[in-house]
Length: 346
Image 1: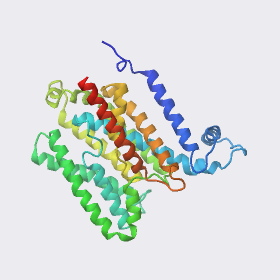
Image 2 (image 1 turned 90 degrees about the horizontal axis):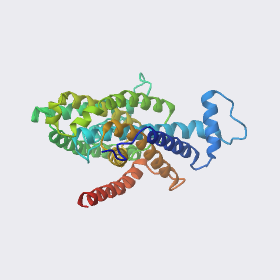
Image 3 (image 1 turned 180 degrees about the vertical axis):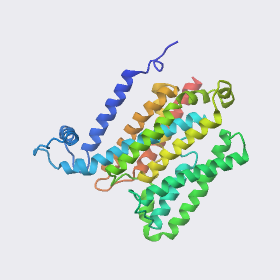
Image 4 (image 1 turned 120 degrees about the horizontal axis):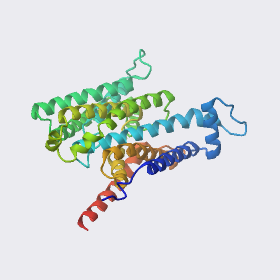
């Protein structure tokens, strides 16, 4: 029997793409100085095709040098965190799971904070030591968590991985507090970064995020069928030919790599991977072949709007984007949970 969720298809994706592009243009246009959307679109279009920008457009440098790279990074980060959340919820069959469930996000934060606190720089790399350290610690965290999980449970069960991930996150949190205590001269920078911020993002950051999303996001999307199989339980997934342990490793590695890159550039941004997949699932249903692509668009839109609120709410002061996502995400999650409970008891 077909229903609205089963008919989710090309038209809906076109609407998703249209919403993303409209939100993108709005976020580039609005800020401490508001620029007409028509001028914004003209500036970006002419810039992309090498056409001279009309003199009638005021301050095109604000659009091209400040807002455009930032909004691109915000959209890519939102899309990445959202698809990671959708993948982890499917893999672990836990509605409270997201990309940080494994403790990888905490590990990436630890690496970046160490780089900030001790002024670690890597001149041989094209990017800062913060990015490299965050990615390295993300993968180290994954290795530690999976190793401990394997020692406790050879089958790498979901409950064991979640338990080790939570314990590891608590341990990392204490280490972060310790480092922050001794890095008194950089406390403000560390604190603001831990709350999440994409201010000062560059086109180089956007390129790294894009490459990471293409590589790791494609790996996740290609395993949508296996994630559907996990919905009926790991044992049943084995019976229909899914290599459970191998799929877990691949998806966890992809999620870890993607989160490591996102955290290294934007800091810790919570609730995106937790809330957005739930919201999207209401439209697409539980099929990961539709849910994961739609989560990309939903995450990009959600985080762009959150970043816009962070920039204009207390103008000229700027809120950390993680504060906004946590505030909005908590309210949305309570609403989603309440609505689902009402439907289940109806």
